[in-house]
Length: 427
Image (cartoon, rainbow, N blue to C red; front, side, top):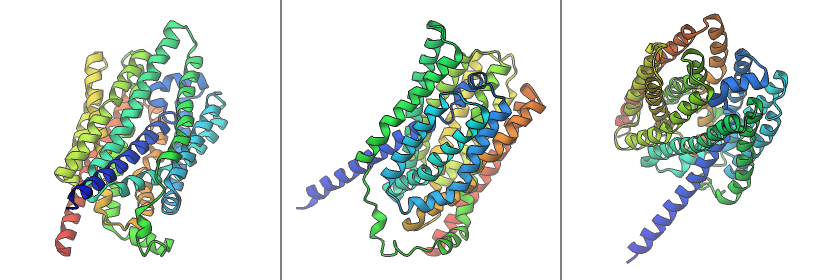
């Protein structure tokens, strides 16, 4: 007799969870494009700000340092503060710093802005977002929830990027704006979107957290909990899988300058190709997430890491005489595989078997390992390309990252073995 009521309650619960996931997806898709504007406009940024590639790399290294320093505190914060407050504050702070960024200040000031962005998107945003998604999804839904998160935020980024690249081309070619003016308008587009979204988050995201029902939720001991997390082999393997997969993704940030400098493409042509790559994110991430739920998360991740490494190596093998069509094809394949990896690698969090009350701390710890490329890759990239100008420098850079993708595949396979052994022992 109660089946219809139970069914309605279940449907209402699912609708509520997916609605909150949608808000988190939009927030995640809106907050990072301005910070990583180099992905579509690197050469224009260098020209407009009057800085070198090394200086831009140092700014991103500064961002990476802040991320690394705040990952663990971010996890601690996510276990104690409402997601809506953290996410809303992060959007507002990032947008306000974007206004300062739009003045195209000197390099020393630029590093201050990047440091602020590191706080706003690292300390107050990252772990809160990941934990919120992990708690929203049931165990059998972890792959699809994280796939929807990464694919959905990619869809948001692709839509926004498609709009700004079209506008950028219109301002440059139709209105005759200087590059600096057109770029400033692009920055303001992202700023306005974030500032409008910030108050929306407060009214939509539910503050009530399931983990409060846990009788141990107030049993807080930072060092004991951190020791418990660090002692788990699964945590380290999950972090290393993310590290290798994230490096493959980081390589794509250099595609814009690589194609413009070595293949003779215009800024608009390069922007069009890199935006087309962004459209691979919702396809690759969502597909990988669902595949992980229905097959095996770690096995799917391992094969995707191999595919990502091979596709990046193909980018290296392309001669400088390759046509635009061939470049587009390879870039889309690299995008599809790297976004698929991103869509599933956080689903390995569930394999670590961490209690909900300290899941945020575990996320921060794994992020500390997994996103460390934010520090060292910018420091490697700039000097390497200056020491070996032209295609050679990029070939060395991409080949090294492709090799790390293969190492990551071994780590994912090892995690699969550890989890299987643990489950057999617990049975």
